[in-house]
Structures are given as C-alpha cells and as structure tokens.
Length: 358
Ligand code: BGC
Image (cartoon, rainbow, N blue to C red):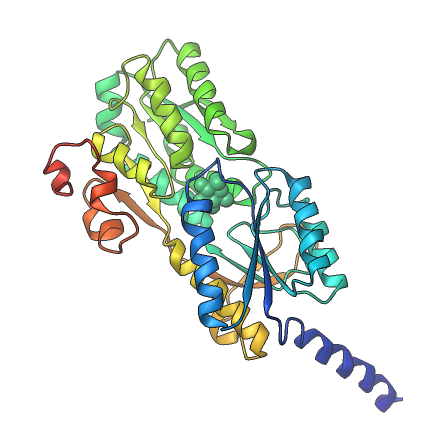
C-alpha cells in the first residue's frame, strides 16, 4: 500500500518540476501602451534583450493587449498554439487573466506574473515591486510636505486619483497611500474631498476627474495624490487651465521622462522610481532557470506573495524596491542609474535647473 501510494506522488512531483524545461520559445504579454510610457519604452525592450541574453537561442514572442483583457486572452491562446512554452504576463485584468494561467497549465506551460499579480493559485512566479510600498512612498511624501501647500492654497482639500480597480497594483498603491494619509484625514490636517479609481488607468479620464474635483470645490485644492506619471501629466493640464499648476502638490509614479520633466518644471512634486531593468532581469533569470531546469530558490529567496482569493496560494516572488524621487535626488537616482538622461528630461528647461539640467 505504502509503495503504491508513494509512486504516483513522486511522479506528479517530477512532472511539476520539469514545466518549462528545455523551453526556447517565450511568450511575453504586456497589458497596454497608453497608460504609462514604461510598457513599450522600458519593459518591452528590456525583456526582449534580457531573455535571449540569459538563455542563448531563446526567442521572445511579444504581444501587447492595448488595455483589452479579451485581446490578451486571444493573444495568450495564440502564443500557446504557436508552441510558446513559458509565458511572462502583465495582465490587463488581474482577475480575468486567471483563465490564461489555467490554459497554460493545461499545456504544462509555466506562467510568470509580471509586475501585476494574476489572481490564480496556479501561477509559478510573480516578479514585481513592493507595490504597497510604492503607494506608501507617495502618501508619505504628501504627509511630509503638505503643510506649505495647505498654507499657500488656504485649504486642506485633497484629491485622490487612483489607478484601475482591475489592476491589483492599483489597489495596493491606494492601500499604501491611505496608510500614510488616513491619520491626517482623521486628525483633520487634510480633507479627502474626492477619490476615484480610474478605469483602465486612462490618462484623459484622470484629467476629467481632476476638473470635476476642482469644480466641485471651487478650485480649492492643495493636494492631488495621483497614482502614476501618465495620469499626473493630465491632472497637471487640468490644474494649468485654472492657473494652479505648480501650486498644488501632485504625486506620480514610474519616473517617466515626462514625469521627471514635470518635476523639474515645478508642476509635479514627486514620482516613484521603479528600476524596471531589474524587474526585467529578474524575470529573465527565472525564465532561464526554468528552461535550464536549475534551482530558482536562490532567485526568490523564500519571498512569497499570497493570491488575494479564498485559500490563496503563496507564489514564489521577486519584489524589487521602489524609491521616492523629487527634485532633490533626481541626479543621484534616475540620472545616475541611466534610467533617464538629463538631455531628455531637461528639454526646453533652463540650464542649471535643480542642478540637473546641462
Ligand atoms: C504599474 C505602473 C503603471 C500602471 C499603469 C501598474 O500596474 O505598476 O508602473 O504606471 O500600471 O500602466
């Protein structure tokens, strides 16, 4: 009896551990391009370069869903039909993408959830940043700098423009921001007058939201907590229309060229720098290890992320560390790392701006 029970179990274990072994065709599915310059500008080229660099001979099959979860589903099916044997997916929709993981599992294709968590217990790995920390850096920045903005604007009114509810990250960013801001709302130091999750992280919608918040509050706003640089750029446009750009504290995320430019211009206070090249490299390392059949525990170091569903599994994870950036540390972070160039972020700005511009 013991022997009989032992054998099938061992077999299952071996099958599980060889998923992806020998694989040379990697499907990379990214969610969209319009919500942030990062996806097409940084993630795509980094993944396309790193995967074959660490796994010589490997090909990367790339598709972008342009914000449509159904398109992503179709692209994933196509990738599996073509024989892609490891999938790297940043989901357009964290919940809907679970169907892709199920389809992959049926073909013994391992899935790495990239940047955004997919709500599936069958995920093999998750590579991202500490996203609650991202939101907390944004909220903490507001908590440390709000006073002069409240005095100058004569109001405690705070607006919160979050990302898309279908993106698990947006929920974490908001959670982290609230952890820093809620004590200020409770004490009455700040007043949360308008808060929205922005469908699809649509940048233009963020502008409409900001306009609505300004109108509803007779243009009395001191703080605009905005979840990323793309939306912040449009929020700044709404502020500009009522001559409040540079007067309202605006947050962001991604350290995009436009975001850093807006900081140097004085229209945005901060952004969160996430070293995406490290995220892509960690993903490529996992892909290479899966294909070579080598140990991945030294890559994930025991870190796990629990899928936020009933009986959610603990997914082995690599979580990189985000950094808050404002005009005081642009030089020592994003410029020093070569994430952006001074020439690009300074376009049109006076030489010497914040000690950054040539
Ligand atoms: C990413 C952010 C990005 C946002 C919109 C999030 O999941 O973590 O970096 O700005 O999506 O694309």
